[in-house]
Amino acid sequence: MSINFIHVVLYNLVHFTCTVIECIVYLLGITVDFYHGVYYGKHNNDVLLQKLKCLGKPPTHLTVLLGHEEPSYKDLANIVFYCISTGIPYLSFYDYKGVLKKHQNELEYHVNEMKSKKDHIIWHNNSSSVHKNGFIGRKIHLKVFSQEDGQSSIVSLCKNIASEKIETNFSIDSINEHLKNHYEFPDPELGLYCGEVFSLYDYPQWQVRVTEFLSVKSHHNLTFELFIDKLLRFGKCEQRLGK
Image (cartoon, rainbow, N blue to C red; front, side):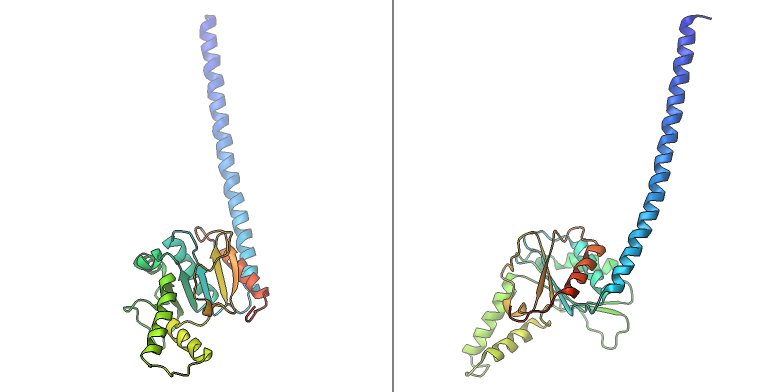
């Protein structure tokens, strides 16, 4: 038996042994990752359930300010169902650039893809949305608006005053009532703004006198757990009127 033949046999044996060891290590890694995921997934779910139990009364109206971000329709649809799951009856999205309002049909598509038969979504700036009286199930009111909506409400009020459709001796209270009727929703109690720097981006200021604003890094990939954390923080905040 030649030395070269022995070398070839030994080389192939070593190569085969190394391949088997690599396969075993790979399979062990998959097994460890699987059980690690199961354990920590269960742990995270347990933590989330504990947080849900700690939630107090949710805000009546949550408003989300997109800031400079481009809308992620799927992530915004997730926020809709985060609100439904936590009992928030009014949700509004404010995109000062108007992109979201222009493409609201894309958001509606993703919401309809995710909703179940027991969910009733009422779009307040969609004339085809039907409000079902006596509906039994989960319900939420939705509104999408932009910078021009705030400006148009002021213009509408001025036109009414000019045409004497409202009393000449108007007061701050009467103007406030007119603006509230135009906006339809109650004042938001909680506002989530996207990004590090806080700015209202010309959000209608008569609506945010008692709003508590909290920051989220982005609405893109916003998780339910982070959403719950913001609600918990909101529950600890004191409502400030006119401050």
